[in-house]
Image 1: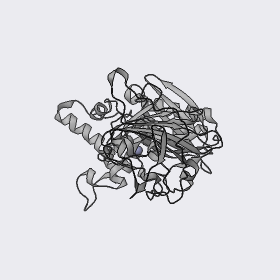
Image 2: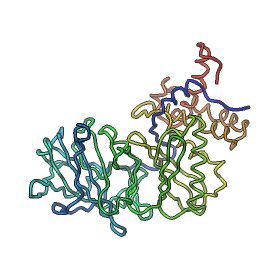
Image 3: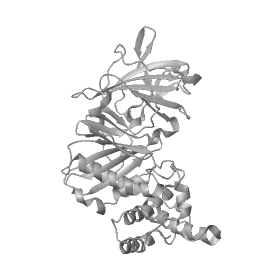
Image 4: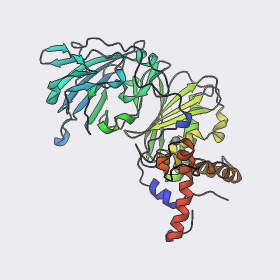
Length: 413
Ligand SMILES: [Zn+2]
């Protein structure tokens, strides 16, 4: 018997957009939202950085917010940032992630630089309503050591890994402002991000995407590129190599990606994959996708994971399968996790990694977890717990297929 997937769900997946997903089942304690420690910053007003170029290609207006970030040289943890803001919707500039020890923010205007006053958790910069240029720097090491929890940026080997928004000073009202980021200076190779590429060597996102800004690494890491028909993966290895070695990890990811590609006819999206070693573990222990602003995948690999265990791992297939369906930020989390939960074992069975009887045994055993329990609301959207999100969502897929066939859509898939 060969497992197949519902046509209704495949039609959804064929939209080819990217998913955003979190896996709360694997999350550690969440960050308290503020960094209790320090973030060192210093006056940068007279330190030249690569100019934030206005982008006026074909008459398109400059993005309202432009960052040029200068990754530090090896041995240094100081990230230097030059930012230009145009038409700010608010004179208040904020950086919630840096509130515990905010950087010194320098406003650069014709021939002079002055520290901006900070009050009430914000810097006041009325000139940004028209146009302003700012400079600041962030101590990445302090940023990492000051924060606890899975959502925090963290030091991995010689790099800091976190989401792109962590170091961004921005107006407290962003609306849907376009944000543009480029890496500058002498060490641009020490910057890797899953943010959407702009085709001109930089990256772009919108203000509404900031809370799901892609994973970004700044510092020392190893890098590889995997091409598939229609898509490519940029793989960033952080920290020391696993026992199996980088090549074996690449082969692992390539096989899992091929598994996912069988669903869509091709691998669904370009993505940047960050591989983080986990000491004293012998399996893939966690994965997460952030892709609203460009696809990035975090994979926590046990340091002692054996290379031949790829067939028994479900995490990498689950995470990569998130790159097919659309994002459902703020709602529909049950659908994106349900689709991944449903497809992952099916795709592994299709690849010969699971026996059909084990696949169906898995579904029979686990899917009842998604059934509504006494006292729970009927809508999956309103049931905010893991079983409903993952297995309730997974149950939706075959039920949708059967409903579609009853209503004349052809035989169940
Ligand atoms: Zn997931």
